[in-house]
Amino acid sequence: MRTDKAIVARESLGDDFFGGWEPSDKNILMRYKYDAEGEPSYITDFLGVKTSTALVPWASHLTGLVVTDIPIPDDGVRAEAIEYIALLNSIESASTKQYAMVELGASYAPWTCAAGVLAMRKGVARISLRSVEASSFFQPLIKANFEKNGLMAPPAGVSIDVRIFAGAVSTKKDEMFFPLVTSASENGGAASEENVEVDYVGRKITNEKVTTYTLDEILEGIATLDFLHCDIQGTEREVLLGGAALLSQRVKSIFIGTHSRSIEGALFECFHAYGWNLVRERPTKFVHRPELNSPVGMTTRDGGQFWVNRRFI
Image (cartoon, rainbow, N blue to C red; front, top):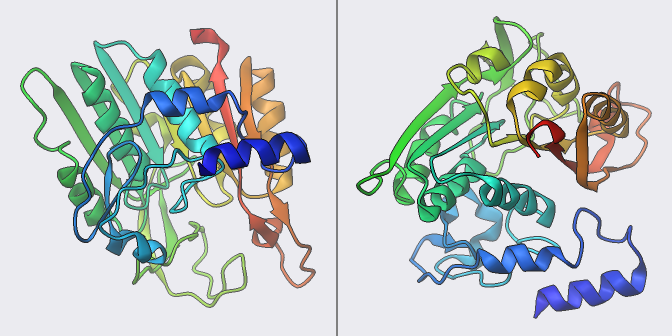
């Protein structure tokens, strides 16, 4: 089994080799394995969640298949173990009365979708799902992804409130610019206050103007948020540090995709000071590129931090 080989390699090569997970995490991942059948043009993951192959074209060799391996060290499609561990921990600690989740920088909202499927399967009565995505290409794909996985027509006794914010998260209500996406293979765009012609990694881009939403707006009406998934390509420092007081009052757990070592350090200092526990971490890797202005563009492998708020433990 791929997972067992990864665990053996981890034990042989040391703690830092893979990062973001522990051998004991196999237990929680195994608890959520779900028997499902494959379907043409879709990839079915170990949770039973279906993703159109058109949304993950780099994984087209898996179309129609069920990926039965649990995601240690990764799922072979889009994400590493740490993100699944963060999601599943939020489901484990949730009540059956209500569950709320927000995904910032959602793309086609795979984590919001998976959270909704798992909360529904757990028998949660009231589910709130909010996705924030700046790209006009991906925004309509979110609803289609939800519909495929049964979230737009839940069973009797389950209420699901789905909200899709067509724009970018920011510290202020305004308009920003976002790289125009024309294909599902184009990921990694970041919102900018200026209509730049070259992005942070040196790519020539054309932008579209997007609305911005603050964390207060996005969380409006949610007293306690079970899980926040944030992957906003280098703007996580400004957004999360600016909203740290609000998040510390109302959010139980957070996964943050990180995009530079300086961002990781700033997040650690902030959330540590506000009384959060860093449960899992995978640091970024980078190669210094003197021609770039931003260290975010030098990152060759994104990192991740999974935080749990001690206020809710």
